[in-house]
Amino acid sequence: MSAITAEKLAYTYPGVDDAPGVAVFEELDLSVEEGSFVAVLGSNGCGKSTLAKHFNSILLPSGGKVYVWGLDTSDEEKLIQIRKTVGMVFQNPDNQIVANVVEEDVAFAPENLGISSPVIRQRVDTALKLVDMYKYCNHAPHLLSGGQKQRVAIAGVIAMEPKCIVLDEPTAMLDPKGRAEVMETVKRLNREKGITVILITHHMDEAAQAQRVVVLDKGKVALDGTPREVFSQIEKLHSMGLAAPETVELCSKLNACGFDLPLDRLNAEECAQVLCETLKA
Image (cartoon, rainbow, N blue to C red):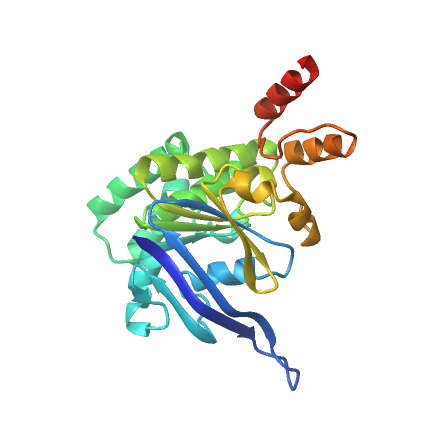
């Protein structure tokens, strides 16, 4: 079943004063299956964040349609249901944290949905346990690390019990430890809870952990497939101003020196294994 579908999506940012608008998409088609984990890549300005904001009606199409579990995102009467179904996590967790205590912050969205106090209590506890932040429930968010703050922000979305979480470059402001914490949380939510995950990222190693990678270029879907299928097309990625994961880039450079290595080794262990096998041969 399709969770989110974009059909001939067009979007143009309005111009300022008499300046013409800026077209981002003209006829973009994309379907995301329920329960999947999809990474979306593309160079700066390709429309990654613009696309993400269409998935829960922050932006509305200039043309075409976007459907969320069959709901038309342009239908104002369905707005609340759409935003309960698709939760958004943004780049800077400080912009999503609104309370002085972690558990109060996670409870904020359910409270605004009019959910009863006993149910909110249960949802908050469950969400914090899912992101491994329950032990910090009475802490002040501003005293947490960047990775911990982002996990609290994710917990706030989980407490709304969405079917889908869209994360717009959630690790861009984090150190490697924080990035790893957030990625492990995202994968666990997808694996254990069946939550559909759409990850907007510029980190190729993060995209390599998804089930599917979609690459945007010039308002279109340029590449779409498994991480191995997409990242092995290294020349095409380079032509769009993108790199492959470091292991793929290494194998490609060695091939230019006369080796014949596969270009689908996406992590250090796989890369080391194929190098050892090649050197032994």
